Length: 104
Image (cartoon, rainbow, N blue to C red; front, side, top):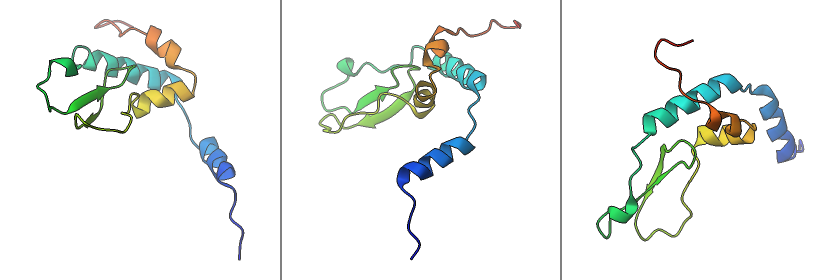
C-alpha cells in the first residue's frame, strides 16, 4: 500500500502552482465595490420572519441569505475578497478608487 502524503504538503504544492495577479484582483475588487455600492439590504427594516441577507464586509457583495432563526455564523467575506486578504492586498485594494471615464 502506498502511504498518502500529509494534507499540508498537498496544499502547499497546490498553492505553488496557482498564480495570483495582484493588479487584476484589485481592479476586480474596485469594480465589485462600485457595482455593489448602495445595494446593501437593511435587515432591520424587513418584516418579522423575513430571511436575513448578508454581505461581504469589504466589497458589499451578497454572500448569503439565511432564515431569520439561523444558528450558523454567516459568511461575511466573499471568496475574491478572502483571496485578497490571504495575499496581503486588501489594504491596497480598499485605498484604490475607480478610474474616471476616459482616464488612464
